[in-house]
Image (cartoon, rainbow, N blue to C red):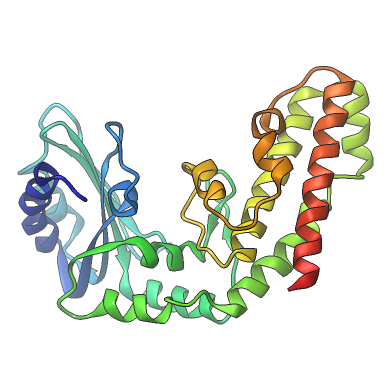
Length: 281
């Protein structure tokens, strides 16, 4: 349940957001408030899907009229150069506000691609494993419409209500070999013998993030992003016990051969459990 004070802030911001848009659009509440996981550290996220926007300078003027004066707003252009679009980020009465302005045309195509099993990860520096194009389906699953007068979000939610079989197959096929790539690799084994901690911890964390993608797909659950993954994992019906029971150790940067071998052994146990589940699909 969103608190009244947050609803009041949303109501104050919507007219400015709408003034930035042209053509058909939909505005939704996103991020932790939409997921029901917000806390005192959360920002306020608006996800906007639109056919167009007014010129950048006009958007800057609109935001400057409401933004806190002690924090410089950040806006970029264009909104259709990447799936995640552009942004209009600012502070309003001390609250961090992030507005993602996404091309409706691009997003519609991305959703259809993912439903058909066409997936990829776009290299970015602001996500841990790149930007998965299929995050668009996850996003649609949790956003809360604020203005959907054209029925855009309602249509998308209907289309992704059932986890797409082709998406599941694509994620499993893409990541299955990646999940075992390092486990018996000469360079990983020699790094363990050398106690090359930075290298081994990087391999362990990279492998774990691949496991996460496999687990969400196996559970036919949309991956909702890099934050609070542990909470997401604990809600899955299938997640290998060695992963949850040893998460801190698996994520650790260990400096002795015994611990590094144990870390690798745990990764192999988890991989075996996941592969058996995949083979049973």
